[in-house]
Image (cartoon, rainbow, N blue to C red; front, side):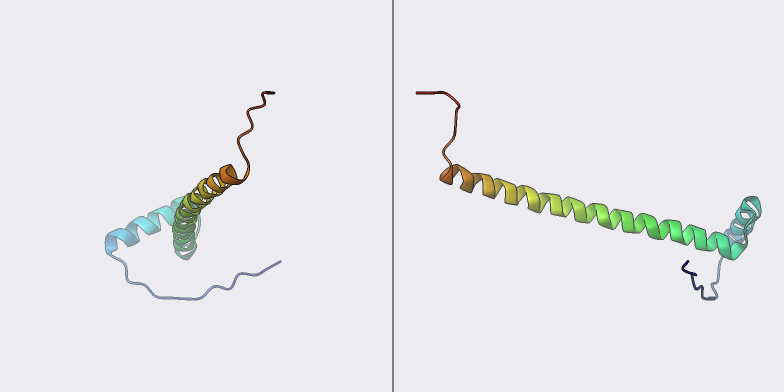
Length: 86
């Protein structure tokens, strides 16, 4: 089992954000630090997902262009087969 190492950092937050954070931590029955970790992890995962989606879209365009080029070449090499006998 892999044990996750955590590091301590200090952040300055507005009173409004800190109040909201404390309220949500109490509501979720977790520490403030744990809630911040969960929120940032969720944000991090969403950002990674967006990056992956953008990568897949770009790759899809590349694959489509490649398929079109291959089809064009295939038509030159392999004549169309209609399935009808002459």
